[in-house]
Length: 175
Image (cartoon, rainbow, N blue to C red; front, side, top):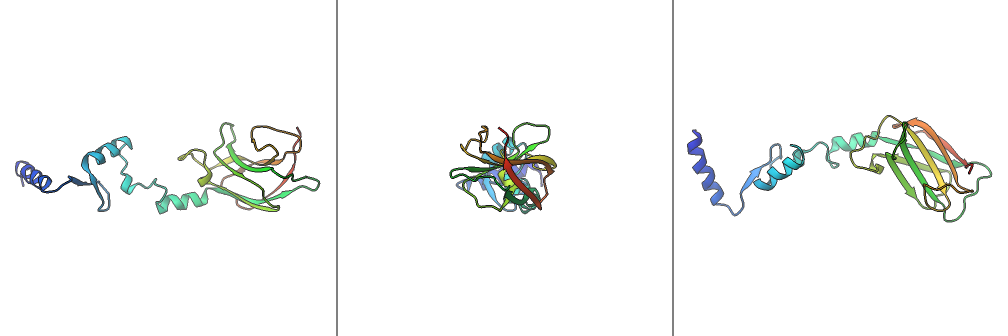
């Protein structure tokens, strides 16, 4: 069929409906307003939000996130004192320094404590949570992870994302 015959047919189908619908490429049968679809796709750099393998609900992303984790057991060293009101922080930073890749803040915990830090705890969505990292577990007396005070307890080590059998002992920090 010639294009000149298609245009009147397209106009007729648009005129017969309340809203012009256009199937998003790869949209698996879902439709949206064509102007909104074009705008959304342009903003996303050509990604189709209805069939996006980077979306968090996609099973491929969920499988990758499950393997992107650090887990193990945290214990208190003999003589370490757990004070009321201490906050428990878990953080993973790149070995070269910089902002944490993933963090978790917990209130009161009982030891030994089974911990986990995963891609779900990333500071920024889309940050690569893989490879070698500097893992820190801290019990902080004032609830501020940036300050160090007498009585804070912690442990830090180099490890790699994917380690799930870590056995760490938190010791009083030298302040």
